Image (cartoon, rainbow, N blue to C red):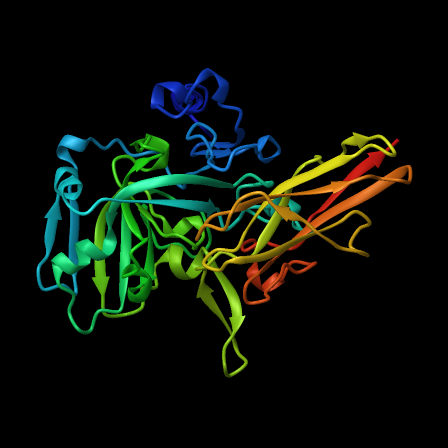
Length: 379
């Protein structure tokens, strides 16, 4: 049971976003949906989607454990493992290195969990565990080059300062820190950052202050917050959050199922407006509006249906294509028949991969990109 003081501490984190530097201007009041208070989990109200960039005070928050109390003056990043030159870096050291800003659409791997046909454990996200922001920091590749990788290096593990009991089956005894690995190939990509700014300001506590990883194109669990250790390994990392949690079933070349770590985001389109249950008038021109993304791939198209998937029409992109970012889209519709209409949207990436109509059970409660149904009433 949550203690009284912890409840009020969590409430302060949620209700007092302005004090944490997350609320932005008065026009950007925190309207996020509360999906958890211990730890804090906040959902971007997707129906409010308007601008390309998500204000910091509206960006979704996914925390696994309580926010750690870190200070810039005492912060150190340890870089070690299969390197020739282990490093201990301060935030000042990182700021003196090459600086880069990337714009990234980040999506929690469990986004849409509340729409699964069978209720699953985990944060009950609807559509809003996805947001787009600008991140500024040092390219990870610069730090790894300074550390001089050994020839047998295979992966890079991000380890965080937040610790807690995941209360899930299969976890090792004691408290865990959240950690994930990425391949050496991905780690060497120039867009992967050790970020210390979000939307031009220092990271807020809920977004990883003072330092976090940003791994564009991969689900949000790879962008580890409150980063304190970068560990280069010569073996595949098989930590709890890599192989037990945030993993899915796939069939290997031998046809046998095996758990594999989640990595790249899947193509997905979501309708922001009209919302499910909305009413519109027969003969009225309706703007169907939303956003779509495809992880590391480019988007080819978004198609929209107003009859539950029987017929599909091409939507129009509002934004130009930017790597690792969503594109807002719209489709104008004039309903001609009264009654219930079911709107649906699906994205297709440059390789031809498109959203499925049903959820793949092998993905468990992750990678939820099946086409969602948005019923509206025409009067």
